[in-house]
Image 1 (cartoon, rainbow, N blue to C red):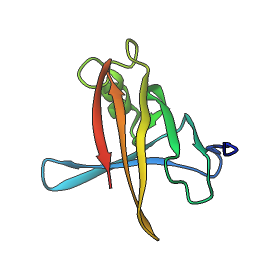
Image 2: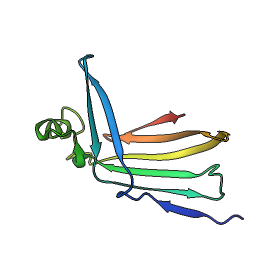
Image 3: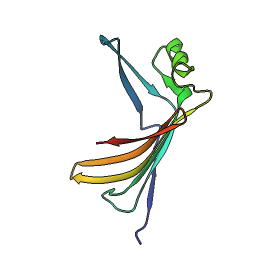
Length: 118
């Protein structure tokens, strides 16, 4: 049996960023200021590592407080009812020396759906 190593995401040296097209002519960029996660691996090449990430929806920051409040409202995230976005990997496979394929479950507003991150 291999030894498991756990890495904790360091929020001081990490970012959760996003960029969304708005009305086809511009983009909105932002970040989530509060998040936590970890990676658990049994080997040095990360094959079959397990990833977990939790994002605090009330920490959204688009550099415009009115928009942030609107995104937290029932029109979008419903952050009072569903305070987190959660991702948990179910598969992480090495494709070649520099590429991996990750499949996981993303939970948003109480709904969990599989996603493939290539």
